[in-house]
Image (cartoon, rainbow, N blue to C red; front, side, top):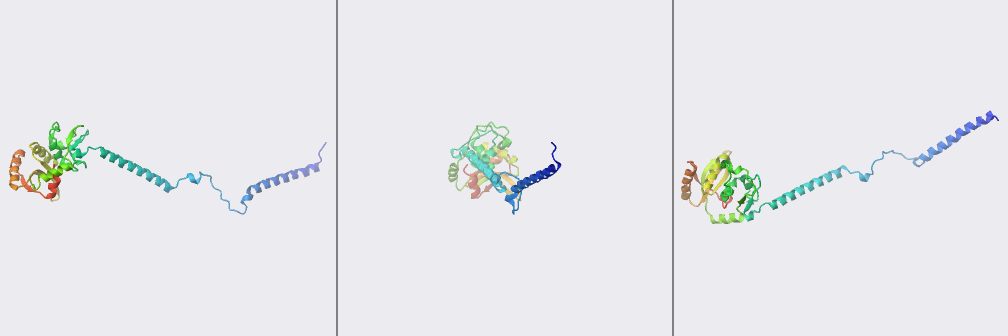
Length: 251
C-alpha cells in the first residue's frame, strides 16, 4: 500500500528536530560545568612533583662535586698515611723516584735542594747510579731503602753543633747543573754539603757550601783543602745567620 505523501512530509522534519534536540543536549551537558568560568586549556605533562627545578639540579650537581672532592681528599690522606714515616728514618723508593723529588716531599725534607743530605746519608746504597753529573735527577730503581734524618735526630744534631756559624762557600752559580757534580765530589770526599739559593742583583744563584765551623781560621783551612779537591780557586769563608744554620744544619 502506498504511503501518503503528506505523512512522509511530516515525518522527515520530526526526525530532524529530534536529532538536533539530542545533539544540543549532549553539547550543553559537556560544557555545563564550565558555564560562567574562564576555561584555560593546558597541555598534559608529568606531575609537578616529578619535575626538578633548576635550582635543585644545580644543588645535586654541587653535592656530587663536593662528594668527589671529599673522596679525593680522603684518598690523598690515605696515601699520605701510607708514605714512609720519617720518624722511622727510612724511605723506600718507588720506580722513577729521583733524589730531587724525594727530598721535596713534605714529610721528607720539604726542599728539593736538600737532595745532598739524601746522597750523603746513602752513598753506598746509591753507588750503582751512573752519570753522577746529574745524579740528583736520575730515576731510581724501586725498592732502595734510603736513610732519612728524622726531626728528632735533626734537633739533636743541631744542639751538638751550636755556635758553628762559619761555612766554606765552595761555588756560586746560576746553574744547578754546574753545582751538582761539585756537590757530589765533596760529599764523596766526606764533607757535609748543602745548597742554598739566593737572589743577587735580581738573579737567582745556587750556593754550594760545605761544613759548619766555629771559627774563621778553621773554616779557612778547610777551604784550602776544598780548593784542591774541586780545583777551584774562587772559594771563601762565609759567616751565615741563625736562620740558614737552622735550615740546613742537623742533617
